[in-house]
Amino acid sequence: MASEKHFKYVILGGGVAAGYAAREFGKQGVQPGELAIISKESVAPYERPALSKGYLFPQNAARLPGFHTCVGSGGEKLLPEWYTQKGIELILSTEIVKADLASKTLTSAAGATFTYETLLIATGSSTIKLTDFGVQGAESNNILYLREIDDADKLVAAMQAKKDGKAVVVGGGYIGLELSAALKINNFDVTMVYPEPWCMPRLFTAGIAHFYEGYYASKGINIVKGTVASGFDADANGDVSVVKLKDGRVLDADMVIVGVGGRPLTGLFKGQVDEEKGGLKTDAFFETSVAGVYAIGDVATFPMKLYDEPRRVEHVDHARKSAEQAVKAIKAKESGESVAEYDYLPYFYSRSFDVAWQFYGDNVGETVLFGDNDPAAAKPKFGTYWVKDGKVIGVFLEGGSADENQAIAKVARAQPPVADVEALAKEGLDFATKI
Image (cartoon, rainbow, N blue to C red):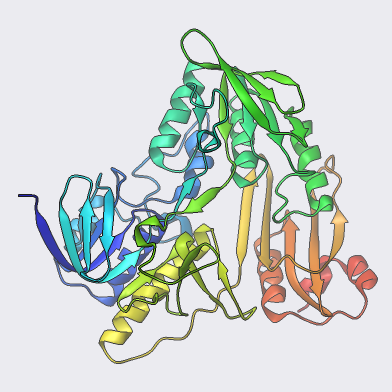
């Protein structure tokens, strides 16, 4: 007979959101044996951003237990012992293959069942793979992806096996930019390939991208735009050796890293809960259409109060904050109290080489570039305002100090009026710092 276990609370998923939810349960008070985290990964929750940054450093690389949650936001590092001390059960290396929300039952691949009173869905996203589209040769060795620590270990092993070799990075978004930098720092010959006219098009304007593409080129990274990888050749060992591009060009490669986006992992709940915009629809407390079932992080489509519309956000900052909000709401409901509605300000950031940017707000409307976006600048500092209906609603800043980054966050939250966009371009960062 396969085992059955019952918990008052179950967190399904073992990423960032799970770790921050566990910490909040610890703060709010949870009895030993009440809470379980069920994760298909083999380690306690950790800060995923480390995998594309510190984990790949040539010297003093980050390794667990160094980046367990919640160190990424300056919080306590929750080691496996912390969970044990709190009486929180970490059920690792366990893949849930069936969720029956009506009977409040989860079933694992091994046939074990888990029942709960309250469920937090924190399943995150899966990477989109080239094999999903039947790309020829995409199953060759050393065509790699990055989502979990196992992926990062495979990447590190490939980097050691193909030392100083040729790496092709497919994709010009977050992962593509961060991994290209990491590979270059490790002395790889790096080529980036992406179909869009410039990198990171979901956020960057042409003016912003001009800087990063020029900066990356100055570091010796080759950039091939406007085409995609249409096939791969492998050597006698099955290791990738050539990347074939749709425009007819071919690139030699010892390894290929693919970062072409992710998909929220919601399949277990299809037909059982309301969905919207690719995620599980929640209220401002992250409760879904099924009472006692909450969704947090990447999988939640929640009411974005600031813009009065439902949004789904794939970012570590929201994973952390949505987890805390959901647990506060669960505990408040039990004691007949209430919590404030989630009022999120979108926030994105990245660091690579010696540059670091932050963005707050919404990137719609007219764009106003300020500062010097010359890739050759000794100390680059520039940014962009997004202006809609006469108000600033989004701000991007490269090279900002802590105070300046705080100032642009305030602007995005306050949405101050702007009468003259040309004057705004001239005023630049001063506009934000005096708000």
